[in-house]
Length: 271
Image (tube, rainbow, N blue to C red):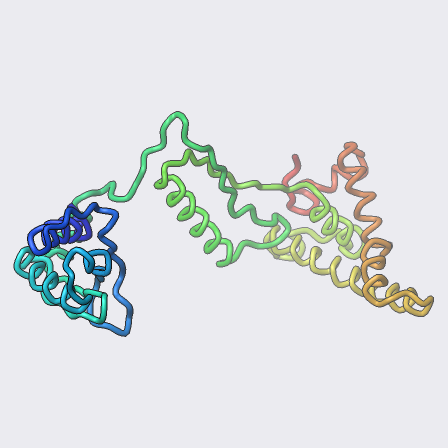
């Protein structure tokens, strides 16, 4: 039986002994004691005032005395603030609760059943065009922890990590390498493959932003608003259009594009 259940049961017994009142569990209002008052749990005594024919303060005092005598191991002391009986819980029940939790390896956990919800948690799915770093470790730990928490709440959990080495992000690095790489490889540069491809991903972005800046100036000179000019420049920059064209060729298995994505040329895994 929990601490709250013991107190509710004792309050029901107390009001019956003191005032002859049969109180249902719903009439015993138990809440967390406000921070400005001493105590852990507070009993609202107003529901018992009519039966007692006494003031809320008197009812609180009488009920508080009863509880300390009836539950000496649970209720250490009490104080009354108007119609609120604040109870200070002794250390023993807290220690008992913690020991019970510690002894139960499955405490608070629900087992998934056949009808339990199916939840997929995807993490961390890193960009294959950049080196991994501590942020990826953090995301993996967060993802694994979240998956365990969701499973502990009775859900069926499927964990997935999408390793996507095809798409526009790959084409950005490929295009930059074709334009400015001069045949550089991990062997010729002395760089790891992921670092080399990451460099070209950054290089693409550098040139792409430069093209956007020029187009924004042009569009604004033609009378376009700045935000609209920026948005149009993102779509109309020649470099991004080339990258999209390369992506279309990649998806069509164009022989001039797919062979670029090999370990021999750039250290990219080919699908």
